[in-house]
Image (cartoon, rainbow, N blue to C red; front, side, top):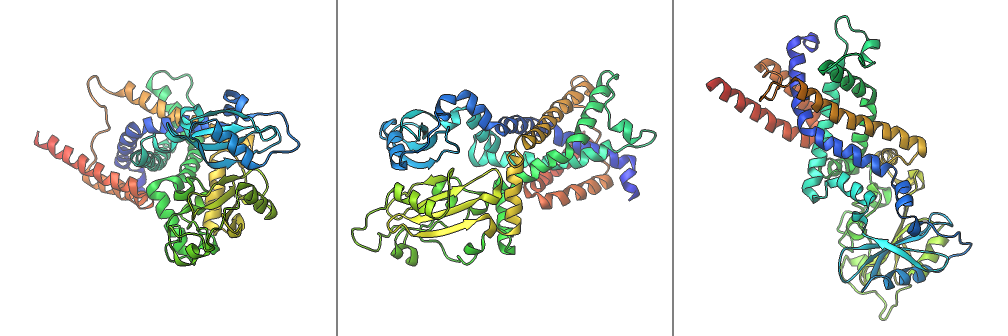
Length: 457
């Protein structure tokens, strides 16, 4: 392992850390700022939208159908697709309503009086913007890929950064763990960057790894791998080898669901549709009438599902009522689908049914969002976000101070032997993070091409 302490290896790692940091820093800054905002989403929304979210405590509540009707009436041509019930007696219900014009609105209704309190377009709120920008830069699949790429390279930055920080020579660990506050210029920024990095590296790495299950490429591979291994999907779904009757997954049908169940098949209402896989079949009994949302709420209550829960309404004649609880501690997660004609429970899955890997992911998600341990969890994750933001700023500042006038100031090119060594190390990370591996190959090709151009010149 002597090559690890070789000066050429140090320069090689520094070069990769330099380029990765320069490219990824802006995106990590975006992720850290938007993530910090979303950590306190409830607190921020309570301040900015108190008149919509907070109501006079109610001892009893009106039927869900009354709340939905009030919400629909407040939006021209409004049609409700989902209702999130109240989390406390002084909290409103939130109804998702699509109108004849404009984007979907979230309408807030007082459960005690049935009064519509106001509405907004989620993406046009501070929290909604932070949420969407954090996940995909509001650029759809392309933005999702950029965020995933930045997150994967963040892992590379952490590993290479810790290697560069490691005390060498006369410098001890105590000195390496404290910033040189009396230094000036680049030495100060270098010391500050290194110390912030070593104190926050573990938490930032945790944030990256617990956020990646949402990513398109890495999340898809993780879900497929855990499904094959039998530690992902709930046991009740592992026997579904054919396309479900609805032809959709829970995520496609409802737009939002716990991570574990995103690819779970959405059942259909009506025995004929459920047994024969017809995506648009009519209910078995001629003239069958839907049970309505109030009866569905009674079925949920009878099954032991209490408020708050998120209830998606049937979409079309074969749609189902789909409800799930999403508490701060995932052990309380539960998802139920109800036939809209018979009121029969078609599916009932709880956290206890998840595989080991799925349980770990759901736990990681709640820790990532600062939910599991309440305020303490939020503060710890905020510390990580602030650390990532500081690294994203101090790194470029340090580079700007060392770069020559009119030049990039990059560490000198690697010798071929050291290039292969560092490439093999980073490629090992690329196997775990495919998007980072693909971009690494592209970077190596560009670096080699640039080296040849320099040699020819």
